[in-house]
Length: 302
Image 1: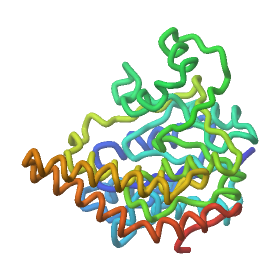
Image 2: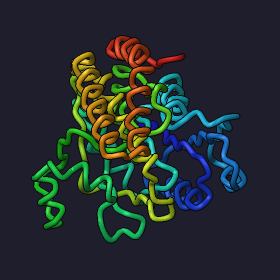
Image 3: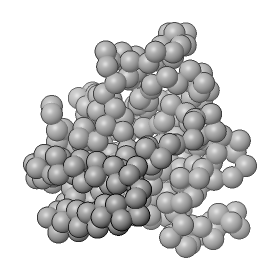
Image 4: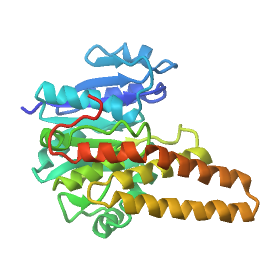
């Protein structure tokens, strides 16, 4: 039987952790569970201590999503697991989710994802639905609830539930910790594609992703997400980083002057911060890009 390690990065996840861990321990295909807690200040760790059959790493500070999950990816490599399954703290699986994904896994797919439903299970998760909009066959088949393919190839799927074969980690490595939160999955997917692997969705596997208990993202969070997605574009190993950098710089410099003329100081500030952020990260992003383009189990900052 293949060995699977499920990795969950937690931060103040008391609302979901029992359902998340409970669903994994109820999986028809057994999985080891590693929880990496990013210095939660609620009851997350207390609730985790009630589970005897899981391993917990308690970080002294919030390392971010990517760096926390890297602890699990490294463990998967070192202890020769066959797959690592990344799962969000606010998500849970069905009994057959992991088993279905493992059975569907193919060598040319670097990441395999289930369908993502919302916490109530009555519709697709909003972010997942947005990402698959341009995948016509999958979108249409979901609407008909009749699937013509065992795996649908997609260009991107968010990292709420990723089955990653060890072959992928051996080729691509881990997340780049230059992304603290947001953008890290965009960057990882770009690197998976660069190394000749595909991203797939198994329509017969499901998870439930409960965003309802989260606070609605503020304008600041939305803008931060934009900044980090730009950073991922600059780091794209198949892209042209200098052209991308100067295009973004020119675009937002124009916005600064436009907002100044319209006397919108808060928006001027946001665009100015974005420009400064990208300028301050550009050199580091280029260095990381060169490092993570190499084939092999590369972990930045190891």
